Length: 286
Image (tube, rainbow, N blue to C red; front, side):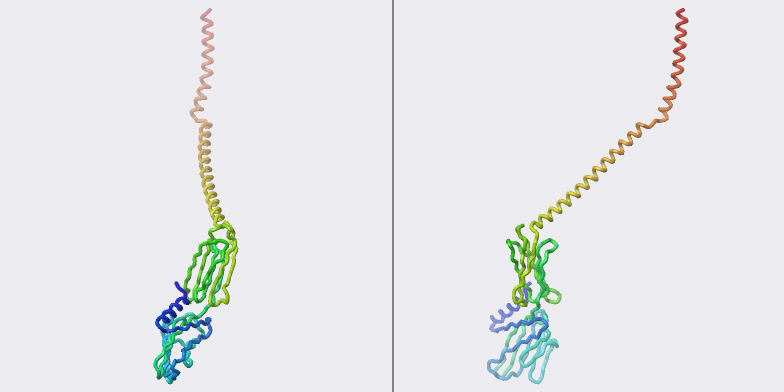
């Protein structure tokens, strides 16, 4: 979106092409703007003077004086003083094109005045959340101009936005294309400054690489934790299986006890039978 100053220049250019010369008036916010209506070429007394106001926010009003009668539907801050128009406590909403029309015995004459109210912006330079230098000119009128001075060539992204109070905020971000950049300077130009303001900031080299490395380390740690958990779960399952088998092998069932008891009962009988058989064999041989 173009600044108000650029829009004023366009208006002046259009008026110049049409044959009407426009006068540009700049006044700081809060002060009184005095818009002069040029004297008539013939020098004849003014019969009627009319100021037509066309502000940049599409507001319109008229202030006229016929000597004994005054008409105005403009703000109470606007007052006609002889042929000049005075605007007290000027604000950015007063920006616009003011047309003075005078009527004399020699004819009707028209003059154009372009008014711009100057508001000084506040300037800051910080590292944003992406660790990139961000220069901002906030709350100015017209919009400030931002440029950069760096040790190496980089890419610049600039955004201009009008605030609800009709002031402008310009935000410019610098992205270095080289890792060797350690210092960056922001230059801000504005009609309210006697000379451009410059702010410098130091940036750590390889800031982006360090961020990527941190992300990689975090990802590796997460993977290791997941693998460790899976290994622990697998080993615990195997341990539980082995423990279950060991308990099963060492447990004596009631059937085993009966077999052992029968074995003990059979052994004495077998021994007795063997003895009887031995005696019997001995008697037979006799």
